[in-house]
Each structure stands twice: as C-alpha cells, then as structure tokens.
Amino acid sequence: MSKKKVFRFPGKEIDVFWDQRLCIHIGECVQAKGDLFVLGRDPWCQPDVTSMESVRQVVDRCPSGALTCGGESGATETPDDENTVSVTCNGPLAVRGDLRIEGSPDDMPGVGFRAALCRCGKSANKPFCDNSHKSAGFEDYGAVGETGDESHDGGGKLTVTAFPDGPLQFSGNLTMLSGTGRKAWQGNKAFLCRCGHSKNKPFCDGSHKGAGFKS
Image 1 (cartoon, rainbow, N blue to C red):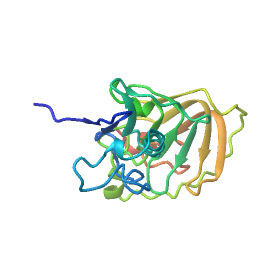
Image 2: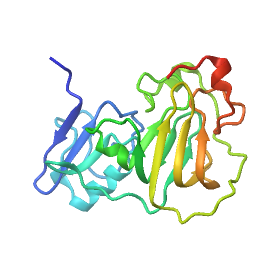
Image 3: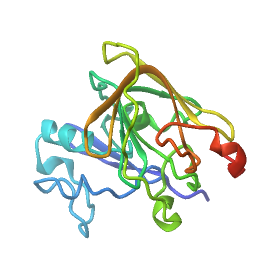
Image 4: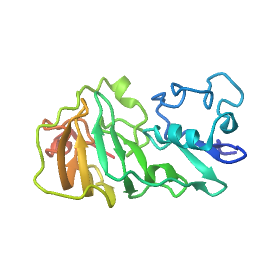
C-alpha cells in the first residue's frame, strides 16, 4: 500500500490540504496568530476555528506550496501580481507568482503559486527543496550582484524549466530578491544555479559540468 501524500482537513466553508512531499517545515502556519494550526492537536489543522479569509491568508504564507485551500477539487488561489524569486540565506529559491514548473505532478496544485526550489544540489526531491541543504552544509547568504537589463510589467506566466544535470531556467517577467529582501534583479529570463557550485550564485556559471552534478 502506498504511503499517503496529501492530507485533507475539511471545514464547513473551506478545506485545507497539506502535501507532505513539499513541506520543509518553515513554520509559517504554526507560528501564525490563532488556532488554525496547532502542533500536537488532533487534527492539527481545523479550518472552522477561524474565518475563511484567515484560512486563505495563513495558507498563502506557505513558501513551498505544501499548503493549499479550496473545495473538493483542490486549490482556488490566485497568483501574486508580481512574479518573484527570493534567494534565501543558506536555503532554497522561494518562488511566488503565476508559476508553471515543467514536469511537476498534476496533484501538486500549490506549486502553481508558490514553490521552494533546491539550489544546494542535494535534494532527493528535485527540483523541489527537501531541506538537504542543512545536512550538506550549504552556505550562501543570498547576495545578488547583478541587476538585470530588461524592463517588465511584473506579472504573467513564469515558466521554470529544470535542465537535465544543469540549471533552472526562468522564463517570464521576474523580480529577484536578495537574501536581505532587497529588490536586486529584474528581467525576462534567468539561468539560476541548482548544483550548489556556481561562483556567481544565484546565477549559473557552468560549474555543474565540472562538479559532475546529476539531477
């Protein structure tokens, strides 16, 4: 029997779904004010203890797409007006917007809006982060040295393509935030490192070839 992957927490007005394949335990849900998520409680998520709007707000904080909300059919979210990727300190690329991550399973609706993408090269769930950067000792504080050279209107579809044994290609309007939250780069196409070896992080510099990176 296959292990359950997605858990549904039903409510009278709205249901919450939790996908354990994507969860990297950032804690935005359990740290949120209120009793929607309470560790140690059974069930730990109870949508009826708060308003439907509050449920949506808390779920929207989840950076990995592990949490979604809606009805029987799953997510009913709308994407952010601006596509962004945050280069987190010593961690993944936190992407938000109108996302199309090529090759992602159809039963992962959350990654159409929010995703945490591996940049250390060690995740067993590529292209998604699984917290392997911690045990791997990956260090990069999220500085972004380039500024980009293209203007854009912020929104629209953002396609993410994971090249075999190579970088992540972002195609579409994109704003990149450094690890300190600074709006650092804007453009329409970027190739970002996911092997962990680039000397020009977060951008790819071809180091995956010499490092023997395998996706």
